[in-house]
Length: 313
Image (cartoon, rainbow, N blue to C red; front, side, top):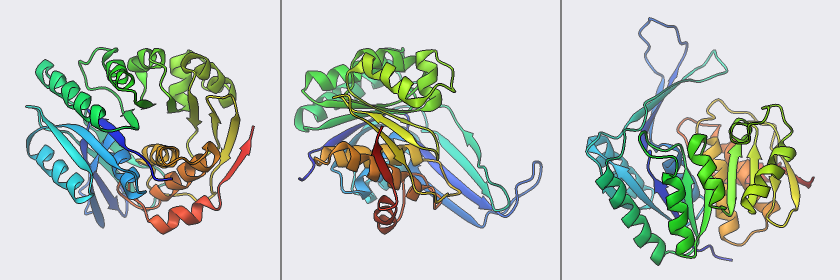
């Protein structure tokens, strides 16, 4: 089955810059052995990964200044339809540093600048127009810009439901509570985000938290736990555990976004949930193998999907 369309709310884009160095030491000059720039931020990571998997993607992106110009150009190169909403603030830059002799990344992320009221109104108007023409899904991912009220993202979910579209959510913090009340058809968050919104101990078992979230949304809930197993509870109550491939990677930035890209691309084209979870886990692991979030070798995704175990829980 050919997929329909996925529309993305790109409120917090960034230029994502990944440096690879031999060794990282505070207070010293470093010459990277590799530098990779990507159109990033969670919404753009998702959009690029889903487009690479074959999804029909359109993004309404709030972009400002020369960095916004560059992001719009990069998305165009990836054959992603971009409806640009101009903002007066320069779009942020986020930096990740990977050292050959260390297992963990060093990350320096700018906050997304506040969206002025007139820009927010323009973004809502642009999304309304896109959703009217594009059946399928609206993706709301990433934290909200500073200054946006907690109900802001839920307003976008309401726009989608009013247009008869489905909503997929991957966010955190105060904005997540109103979004749960909007009853999104798909919720994909990680262990710590689930514990925070439920007021639960982070050590709580994933199936327990998935059931609590499912009771609030009525939709499919997927909870991830880094490189460990993830848990899904379908809208009809069927539960699954996903054991990803054992292969590890040095570059996990964007793996959560790539997971959602695989999951939603498969669901949008009519795959059942177990197959969608298999593609999701494989895409996440493939993303971690090379620098630059939301990018991977397509052949590797197929290989890793064959190594992913999805079993009823």
